[in-house]
Length: 162
Image 1: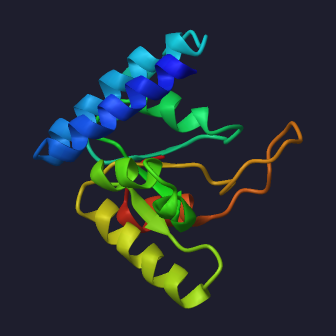
Image 2: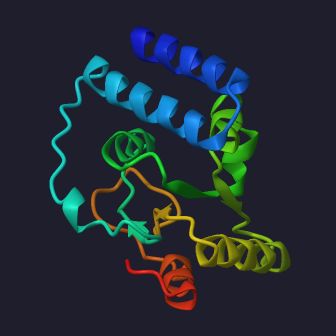
């Protein structure tokens, strides 16, 4: 975990000083691919050929904080996350997520949440591919939590495949 943390801090430093969203996303993609073996995760990706070249929405269940690292390592760098707004205030992680174009959404204030949802839909309509964890969080009990509909509504309204 020490090596993972050092790599994460180096990646953060790199994306703080690197101009251009695409470059920053490539840095984080590479860092994620390097980090997973350090924490004992062997990544085997299948089915990337089924991901459209154009905008799309990827939906994955959520079991731990490592899920975001796995998705960043597995998917092409062009994807942006849709993440609960609370993550924006987490030291280091919030800055990294912001610098790679993460779309933060409010979960508790309905008015702000609706505004965030409209912004995410516009982002998807403008061609940005998105990754959602539709459970919205994870717990310590095995199994799926109830899915929120935001990923599916965004995809339908933006005309993006899921």
